[in-house]
Amino acid sequence: MTKPNSDAILARMMALHPKIIDLTLDRVDRLLAALDNPHENLPPVIHLAGTNGKGSTQAMIRAGLEGWGKKVHAYTSPHLARFHERIRLAGDLITEDYLTEVLDECYAENGGETITYFEITTAAALLAFARTPADYTLMEVGLGGRVDATNVFERPEITVITPISIDHEQFLGNTLAKIATEKAGIIKRGVPCVVGPQPEEAMDVIEATAARLGAPLIAFGQHWHVYEEAGRLVYQDERGLLDLPLPALMGEHQIQNAGAAIAVLRALGADEAACEAATANAEWPARMQRLKSGPLVEAAGDAELWLDGGHNAAAGIALADVLAKLPMRPTHLICGMLNTKDVTGYMRPLAGQVAGLTAISIPDEQNTLSAEDTEAAARSVGIEATSAENALAALTAIIAQEPDARVLICGSLYLAGAILRENG
Image 1: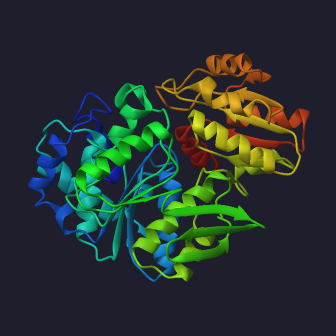
Image 2: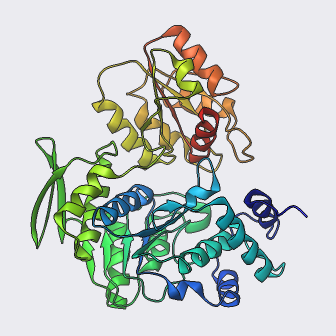
């Protein structure tokens, strides 16, 4: 009998719960107990939550730790092109054979009980981490924090909360205070927490939670500062000042993300070379990523082709800032978004930076906003807009009008994943 591959097992897992998202810890706790609690046997855990910058900050922490000579597990979501991207074992993406093995084991131990896809796949990652030697484990929250399936660690080494903004209101609440309460749920008694820049309403919640749990805060603007000066990144805390390269990841917001990563590395005792590796060596796909090869790049001809997966209002602001600082060139967006997002909030900051927008639907995504609705949203904030059947058709139409354009495909990580697969 042919052994199932990881895709087949993942498809089975999707059928174990009628909802994609159902936040509680009961089911994952049950499965982890059946697996002999692998999360209790991990290398020191660094647990990250936040609305924006979790993935980029984690990528910089990983680059810094690896620059320090450490072996690092890393868990992130969602994936872009292949599920394997979610799980790095001691620095390397999990192999197909090992992924199939741990998924199959988790599926069998679950015994057909109700459990979400994210919960059971998180358990599989924890199982793989526990069985593979490493020095640190980086865990990115999937959604929220307090009842996210990753929030199973009694005492992580350190927690991190990146900037919080309004997103996923249907699951986390419709105010910054409610959302911050969910994110602050990863704070643990006595465990240091690095905090990135926050709105006052969110910071009040984080400080109150930390005080209640006796968790030392290492907060931006209080315990560490970071800024750009003369084309360099300057970081300062009570241990002194670091003069480092600007982040390899583009955008002013990445300076703040780099600051949080450096704060984590300093708290762990890393040296200056590790901090420099964090800024210089980090890679994170679909964060203002310049596409340099593949069928879409060939179709673009003399046009620049970029990809970004930001999808909320804060991401729109950050993206507009990046575009404003690039060399002058007509910029056109190819945009596809989910119907659960604040579409106009995302687009409004971009209106002054782009020549036009071509709306598309996200391929094979049931929650995609229609191209027509995306086009209407763009027009409502003053962006000249049209629609196309897919990204290639949109790109072809844009370069027919402006062959030397800058073309940015944006609006959703799900769209970014589809583009990376198409451009493979």
